[in-house]
Image (cartoon, rainbow over all chains, first blue to last red; front, side):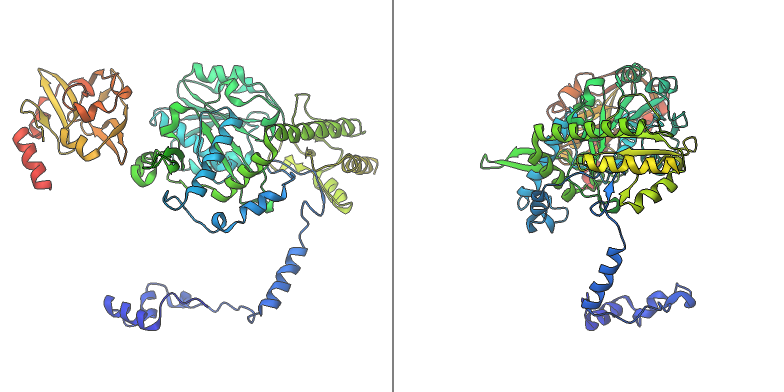
Length: 447
Length: 129
């Protein structure tokens, strides 16, 4: 058991502040609530506790136990064993905010490598050391655009095909502010051109997703031009795996690229911890939030890594900083850097192609089934929407009986899309898995 | 410490040179020394803007700090020093000359009475230490 203070130390501290006992410190709390009875069961031994936790864990079905076709922002990819093995090295695993260059060259270099890999992948000039997840990265893009125009532009255009959770988090961040969030009540079927009428001289930022939430791939060149004509910034939320195959967002004028880094070697883990990717152009570097590691030389002329441009951040700029969050996902960013290094440029393209080809095979097969219809004819990456002959939760129950984790029920986020299932296919799904899914979907249709 | 006698000073270490109703604004030798090596300057107002006394008009960043430059008096921006963001180190080498930041047109000359002259500013700095 850990005791932070000995009874003697406690007494000395209480004497110093002139309080008789520890209980006297809690007089402000109403007596009835002061020491509630917690009604906890009797304490367990370590052996008993482990058995109970295991029993709870076995009640879960994971992507390892099931054939997984669920995506919607978090994807089931293969993770090379070396990722975990490097991640769990004590030098990386135990350190928290290890930014002293004198003792943390390894960690700082790993973050620098992560930043370099992200800039290569996105085509941007600079990447920060990460945010919490894909949703908070988009919210930080909103913060940055607001700061960039010093509050003089307060209109933010969000695509209806930007992940609903990302839009929720942007709304949470901008609660109680004068920000105007528009565009996302458009029909989900709308194309990027439909966002153009929302852009005016008050617009600070336009945010789209690539591939979008529904898996569709659009060329955003015309939209990007419209954004820049209005003097606004253009943010693109990406799936980093897709960038193995698709042209990087800098080619259609992105000023900010954010992304959910989970597909890069991070396990699904029931929703987190994940990784918020954030990269931008050099001209906006001082408006970017978050940690940034730079490469330099020490006083002996040796290559060295150090936090740089820290005057941007809230511990120096206080309330005038772009963001008051500079926490990064150090360990998770490291995992993604290890993953990207292991698979390499060609490997990432291979993963990307496998996802693309398998998803297109699945879509072809399902599209032929009576009662099922592909929702969109737009090119897609590894996820697509199917209009189903029955409610999605009913179909998913049937699939689960056969060891399949079915797709995402879009009706939950888009009332206009009841009975629409979004199916994700990755390199983890074999042809047999896909054929099984198709057969099981056919059974529902025949019922 | 260089404190020219032909300028007016604020407690936040800005200077203003008055020429009729036109004022030229910058930061003092003391300010640049306290900030140390300045690496970034951003003028956050534009020509034609009406800016109030005390509002932020320029942001400077050194290797160890970030600081805002405030308007010593209210006025309309006539000109900004476009060359300064490309050579922020000028603020360290020539704070009263090449590193001027803004020229403004101001109407309310009574606001000048609230500023310090060179002797007053020198005394203020001594007392602050």
